[in-house]
Length: 306
Image (tube, rainbow, N blue to C red; front, side):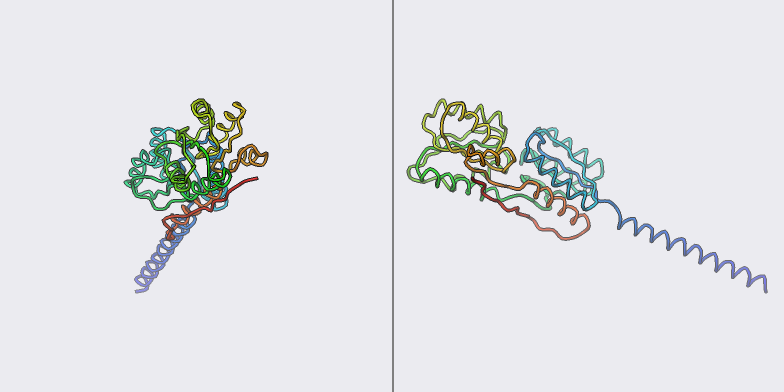
């Protein structure tokens, strides 16, 4: 009988030890789950533009502060490369994707690939025309274009010829900034947009396109460029032609703000890319942890003038 009781006691103790081991394992798993590092993929259109460099730096700052891992891929303004970059980020098992599209239509395929892999997508600065997107972080580009147009009208006395340098065709930023600008200046008596040509958000193209426009249009009072890089290129062409023309840009990059303070550039719309980058990572981190996020997070704009 004593032998039986001894065996029962050993069995009970063994079960307790096993239960203790099992309980510890569960706790360890739960603790690991809570402490898992959030892995964020950021596919950015180009790092050959100060605006997007600042956006990346803002994202990196927020990732460091939150303890998240941020993997950045530079698409170099190449649609095909961006599609490959997103596929690579998916293969790296990121928890969520931040995508700043090179082209709002072309990026649809990449967004749909992420959807199939059950990886949430947040678009940054530029929208996607297709696929399921959890949230969008950007400035109100329509309002910014309108602000620029209204400032130009004020400066030229609601009378004169205006040139518009457009961004990359197909991007939501170019479309929306142009839309806001035309809301301000179209159908105004005495005001005419004499040229609207793309210069792809690029400074050297802004220079070349503006040189060509100056040759065919002798009377120009103002230029609105969809970003500061094109504005600075246009300004160089204007200075080379020894003309006095108001130029307004968009983004408030360091070079543009310096040009405004010198009196060379008329104004620029501050879009605050660092804040866009920080907000994107903070929203992504919340989403991964299961918190509810909004469809759109607007970042405030500001007119920068001397």
